Image (cartoon, rainbow, N blue to C red; front, side, top):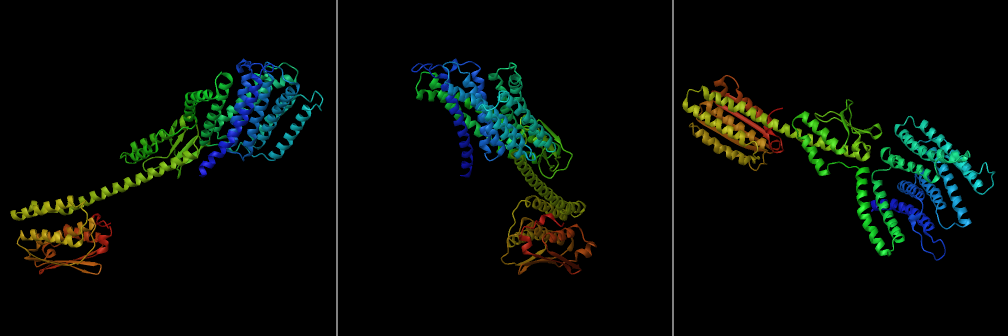
Length: 632
């Protein structure tokens, strides 16, 4: 609801400006087509001389553009003055055009009123621009006071001259406008000096000042000054009025390039729609007056003309003045993810630079040697600086939209979103890479600690049966390493049940009895890592019993006390440490697995056998601790 109200208010104000302009245009048109005598035929509008039309175009265009700026920022003093300047331009150009109309002579009172409007509008134009440059774009000291004093003096002078209370030498409007032009030059010079330390404001002062100096100065130089000095004008006033159009064309260009009056891209939408409405009404009125058709037919024909002329033009102007990224939002997301997942750093930096260039249609992208924490706009909007990312240096983008625009707040927000999305995608990629590397490390550790040692033992074993047993155990461990990496964890009771069946098969093959007892009760599910760690410990203990102990029986018991689980593995052999003389890789691997379970492993071995006791908290094995990673 708030958005609709915000848009309707500027539209209403601009519609009011258009209504004023169209009313003045209708009055001027009636003067041009009115019958030469009462009851006579209406004269064709295009029978007027060519000099009539430049004045009309400059006046109406000045009002629309200045009124549009005011409609968007109605409370700003500078935009109010600018809107009044457009109204003053409309007044003196339309009055001059009315005086040039050929046909029936005007009544003396009408002629005098139009002459007063022409002179008053020309003087008001100079007064307004003096005041405007005293308050905009820089904040001149006592600027508003000076504007009131100077404006009041020129307004009083003009009024006394028009009422005939001054001698002829001082009553010349050309003299007044010439002196006002000097005042404009002085005000522009003061703005130039005042804004030197602010590059953005200085650029506005230079651009806007030159537009006014060339526009109003051209008319004063070619027409007003020669008239004041008693010479023939170098260019007829009807054509010299076109110089005033330069002011408003300069403002139109400066709105995009230098952010005159701080208008955003969205403002152009309102102008286009309002221009379409005005064009439709103007075409409708022109067709009714110029062609012998009814109002209904005229309206339909004007709709047809707008559809085939204005709408394509509006689309072209929209692309010109409101450039957008070449990529849609969904395409940007996919492109950023694609850059983040690029494995080669050099290519990733190249793709990131190319993506930014396509997004903002920049003419130049270069590496920025200066560190930067957040994106920022530099060079008064000519460039956008972006911070470095992982493997990607800081960048500076220059001349967006093919050099036709500047970076603004909208582009800065888009750059921040791209940076955040890129950082998130890179973090996800890094987490994935770490997970892959850790899983590879686990597999490599298992292969080294278990598979390598077992294969080496089988290679050097002279006992054929023992060699076959070791190879079978190795294959079992290898399948477990490969298959259990992605197998979800089971609850503790199921894991121990599977291990009982597997252990019984292994021991029966070598003639060792198994005594297995479980009093674990209901226990939480183990993580994948917890399941793998528990399996590895029991399998390694069973392998050591088979390989080294010479035992006749192996006892495995599992108990639980509160949240603590205890696993005891005992054999009646001759002792592992006594037999080997040192702790091998298998025992070290068991210690590593117990630490990954946040548990404690104790082993005692003598001539009566070997006893391994593992205690670990069930919460640690079930709470997401990745036991496959081993000790830190």
